[in-house]
Image 1 (cartoon, rainbow, N blue to C red):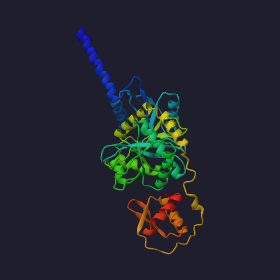
Image 2 (image 1 turned 60 degrees about the vertical axis):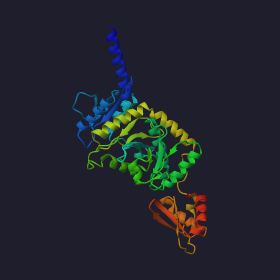
Image 3 (image 1 turned 90 degrees about the vertical axis):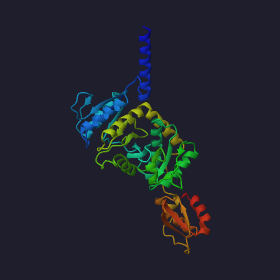
Image 4 (image 1 turned 180 degrees about the vertical axis):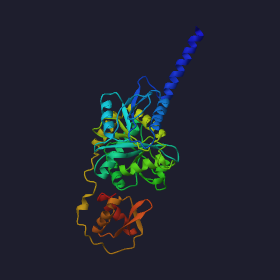
Length: 381
């Protein structure tokens, strides 16, 4: 009897260890997977679902769309419109906790945060954002993308994710605005480029290395990045790495819907389903609401992404030409010519250029300090 009792104790401890290792809990997490519109065989999608359930035994997956098997629950749908109607009903009735699908018409204000595996070091990195539209103004959208990315990373278990901004149009304006929010109490951790010049604005090398946890960019660029990260080693027509485009995040959007590319293969499907389950367990809706509330209190609204002086007359004659032997980096490409004219108004000769890290303003060395003061006072730095 004692031996049997010891055996049962060992079995119980072993099961507890397995549950801890796999993240399994008493409550099952139910995720739907749409098979409509995929460019890869349905069998690959379902295999991805089964792989996710093998790795996490607290997961249950149901199929939305065509599937001939009888080993998973199936909800019939045959078009993107039918999928949207079915998944909304299942989510609203709490039958499913989240859904992974290849198409969903998110409203303006909602965009998705993707998760990739960086090739240089195999590190997970979040791309904020990858599809949808956070706002119609580019700079405003990227500011919101930063908040959305931070919220998702926190819900996914990263307590204090590091943030960087990809060197795209609007990056410097976004950096200034996020710094202003930080000064007003919105706490987050800046990451740093691993290139020699450092800074919060990232270059392509930083994406390969995974220099930060959350990469802030515009959605179209993020969409391209997701495709590159997911299929760079497969010829492009079968995505093999990562977790897909991720959950749609927005201020007034409460359904957990994650997006996949139509070219997503088995490994990405598995990763996306596990990503969805992590969002459920991490209570993404609560984390998102907290982050947005803090960001709004710190002034996340970009009143005007273009400085007021842009409204000044544009026909400004340059002062007498000088030899320009000093560079001033950190000017956003969208503001570059206006910044040059702002210096001309102050009788400082300047011209625009493009350095290896992005746009620069060229001035004479003896004018550099005055030029820096003017540019800071007028909001370009």
